[in-house]
Image 1: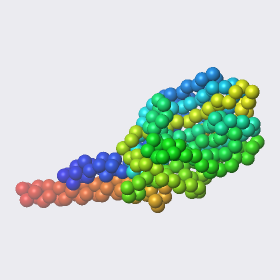
Image 2: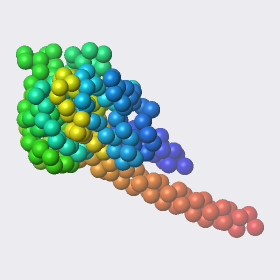
Image 3: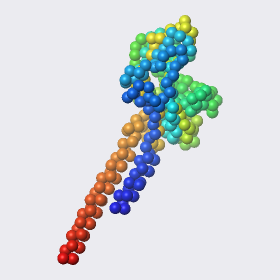
Image 4: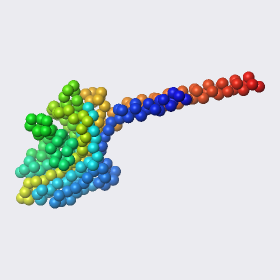
Length: 277
């Protein structure tokens, strides 16, 4: 029985060492308690069973935010993934009015390492952005997709960070199509938080109340290193399958060995009994 015991001792290290660490917004109950939900001068994003509704406003200085209370330590391959629907009816005159999904290592003043997606209500576009005190520009933003005004569209957004040699790279995907690649400082070992946000800072004379973003899912995920370049937009479930298959194979082998040992012990006992009689 020593081999089965050794196998079960090894299973946590075989699976756990490669198991993706993730933190996702849970929509099975209203207002996931792993997130802090808050607003200023307005209401919380509305819960609708399969999504949260983040809206614009008629007022100024309005935020709707979901901020994860837990963090994930970034590995050498780390991803942000979200599925959202966006509707822009009234263009804002200010770039300061936005919807956003991003990850950050600083949730107090937001001046640390960040990357993610922002919907500019002034241009009706989905933009990618990177931020770090270790890059000369500190903040860089780039247009990835135009959103038709007056038409709700659903998008799968993914930003995959990977360390390649001595540098980091972020690949931005929209609907599983690579749309932009940019260098980024190495962040493995840093702890990151997930943020989903709506912000309206333009004056009350500007009405963005009919604009909205529905958040159907949002996750930050550590991916196995060997899959970073092969399939950077794969889900955590897909990434875990090879390791789960290995575990199942080992368990089957365990059962077969245990059955064989029991059969041999039974034969030996019968022979001993026959000799003694």
